[in-house]
Picture: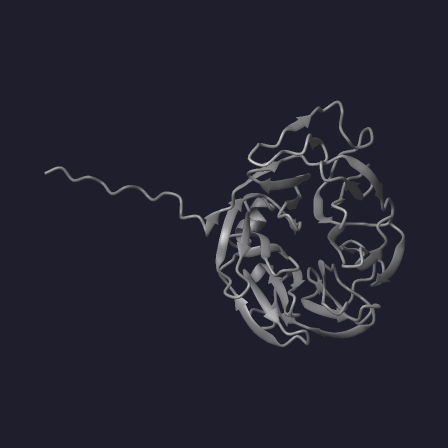
Length: 322
């Protein structure tokens, strides 16, 4: 009798359905021209001698990306020569830039409902609010002074906005807390401490708020996402989504994220080898996924996915028919 060996183990099943997207790997250096028609592939044009950025400019490590109401893409990066905040049109054509000498180590970027641009800087320990032209409107935290008081941060990571205009800061590398402020920047409350229990954190790296005001915190090194009331009362957690770099919740409560299977993998791969997940808000069930590197995600109303990668790229994922 001949005994046949069992098939060796292969790839594990994909989480949810395959997200049917294609990608522009070098947004800002390659252009999508013309806009593709339905059921046609996008046409890319890239010429290394004809970059859209000013001469000699390249992305450094791109930590975050956001899109305004006009469809302009803001890329926040750590390059030495180019301005840290660069703005492009939807096809990747450079428009303008600002922020030289303002930031030490760019990290988080969000645009609020009024169009204000908010940043976190883990080098200066500050949260700043700007106009879209780069005019400074508000600064929270003391430059170069890490702390855990009402007026200091220690390497803050992200910002999220409540429906009433209040906002939350994940104070997440040096501290392990979420800090809530009024819409005009007045300290309201905070919660969190080091640990693995409910309401405890190990690197709260991203924070988002749904339409009902529930606060979602990526407790990255604990490989989970925790949910809270606006006052910081623990509600529940998802512990099946891995080590999540960044969460994005759309106005109609679609949940998207860029994540890794676990924190050890995320650290070893330095944000390579991650996955984009779309997740059901009510149950946490994974609706779709696709492999992608990335540190930050923004989703537009027409479901373009913009990914900021510490590899020095902005990735523009577009539905397959575009």
